[in-house]
Amino acid sequence: MAGNHRAEKRRPQIRVAAVIICDDEILLARHERNGKRYWVLPGGGVEYGETLEEALVRELMEESGFEIRVGPIRIIHDSIRPDGHRHVVNVCFAAKIVAGKLKVGREGRLVDVRFVPLKRLARIKLCPDVASQILKSTRKSKPTYLGNLWKG
Image 1 (cartoon, helix red, strand yellow):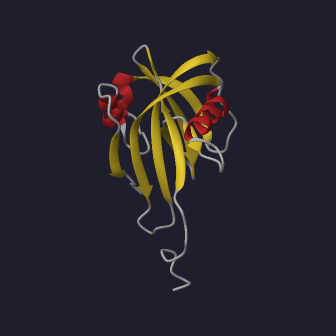
Image 2 (cartoon, rainbow, N blue to C red; image 1 turned 90 degrees about the vertical axis):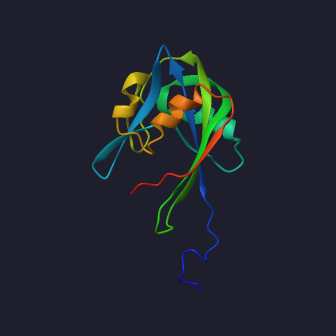
């Protein structure tokens, strides 16, 4: 059983993300990995000893230069690779910008951060594809759990 990766005591990673909408536009981050480019909600991994809110505030400052106020949870979902080598729990919060000026951070896969019109959201490559859930979440007050959204 020692060779079975599912039997190992592995734990999921936790990623926080912000749903920031201003003037019918949403803040998105563009990543590049293995020659592929895709958009994500801005955010990142939670470090040990850090609250979800602290992690989101830190990640948004690092990625975009914005200081934010974290609001309620909007969407929660998993990203679990079928081979079991990766499991991320994504917690997406509504957030508002309270200070700062947009500037693209220089972190790993990040290549761009910008506001994108909401009307274009359904037509861009968002990873994971939560565009319709984002739009629904802006009209609902309860958070939504979406299950596993891994698409490989």
